[in-house]
Image (cartoon, rainbow, N blue to C red):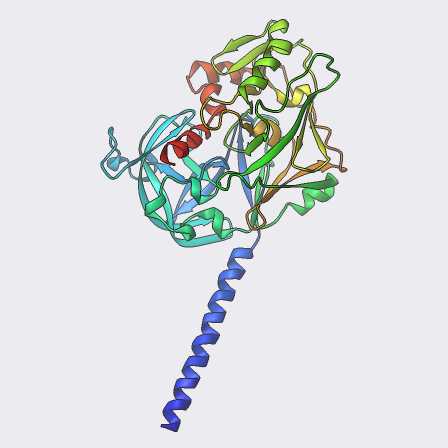
Length: 400
């Protein structure tokens, strides 16, 4: 009996040690930091390589949705279907719809690797152009359409304590980075970046939502608009949206005051203006922090032709979230951003602690501007790209 008791005690002790070791290994893996190259496509989409069951895919980084999926043509073309199968789920984005069939598999992103991760195979989709093979949603799982098909540990974002994105502003420029569980220390040091921490709004738990406390137009004697119509203004930090989206009341006042008098032409979801137009400097303030973030005219301009620009500001679609700001790539290309999953906050970084906007990278040379015309001609228009991810909000609202 004594030997048996000793053996049982020893086995129990060893099981506790092994369990502790397993937990420590899991935590160590979770906290491992790694830097991943991000592809900048025309300054409007940002893609990263991710591996599912040993196969690599280029997927768009989207903090405005929570689902990972890859188009079937890149997984197994023979399985593609023109109609959505009975087990499929339809997700609606601003650029179109996708029918996905949920699956689980081993997912690897940089140093992060975990089993039983949930992802979808897109059977049919109008949401993608020819630049990306799928979407990696990095919002919180409450926004996911997979719901009943997965538990919390099946989502990439919950295996991270934080992640940071540096998005280069110039079209097709190299140097964009995604850092898991950390920041780009060399970048922060070389640019003397100082972080401004913004807690997430407590009212919504699924998006990277922050309070918008102020919006201003510099040197404007006529601007009387508020950040939103009803107060309690919120903004969704969304790397999957190319533009800065304003609530309807703000956008209409801005357009009528500064764009229409400048001979700008509205094209479905954005304004095209003469490059000679004098656009004002904008300012935004978030949460209770006193820091004011500026966007210069060139920060929210995109070269359309040798003589024209696209204004990278649009109206947030009407609906449950119609009174929200969408803090898209127009802003995120200017301010390096950390998404702190554990602490529920975002950090925007400013050079020398001064949030004065970015450098002017506009290039109106013929060679540099030809891409915009080609983009419109081939049909992969900026309308779809710019509001990619907003449909996920509509989808979530419908499911709620």
